[in-house]
Length: 271
Image (cartoon, rainbow, N blue to C red; front, side, top):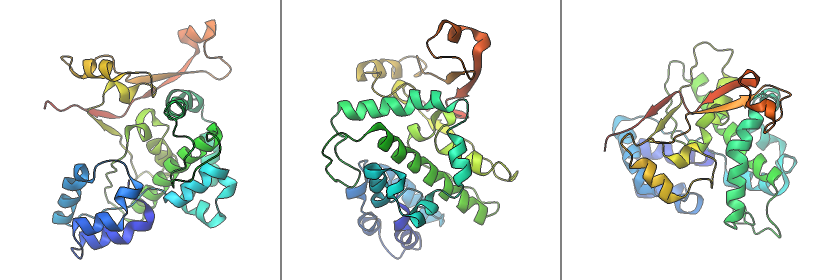
């Protein structure tokens, strides 16, 4: 969640030069992130105690804001190259047979939810727009986020042979292979030493369904079930190329192109 420009603050915290409160201030947590710092503090403290590096992976808000306003052409070339280190593979990723299904299931509903909440007239940097951000701008920002984090993770693992990186990211950026994990695997496909495993912790119904399709009462009922996982979507089916979604042919099993797993592993705690 911490943006790449703040790597020096993380280094200073791990080397015990600054406190957690000072680190929080330097990474501008309250300005740039909506989740509680205290929820992440035990992870930060453990890394500091064991001298485990903390790596900033996220795209800088200023750069993401430029894309939300004007698309990729609005981002200076040097900035674009910082986040997209494999332009050909980045472009090819969108042509994968499953990718449209992923977008329709994960990204498009997220856009619709943002629109219904009335928050598409503000960029991530707080710039007020005259009208709702278009889907193409929202989509561009989303894939820059995923590609940038995958690229930064890949660069670290290439530079630290034998190293293990554990990324703490939102479920929407991991599930069904279309986000960070799928992009990392694309970058690392020629390197047999690099592996990427996705793990989702305690998923709820909301985590596995399209944004806005599950209300809180239904989500709580699923979580309260005996397994704690009633109704979870564990895989996403996509169609063979040329088969139209919603058509009679799309319901035939022979027209299944494949399925995408929610994650490689799902961990459910008892507490």
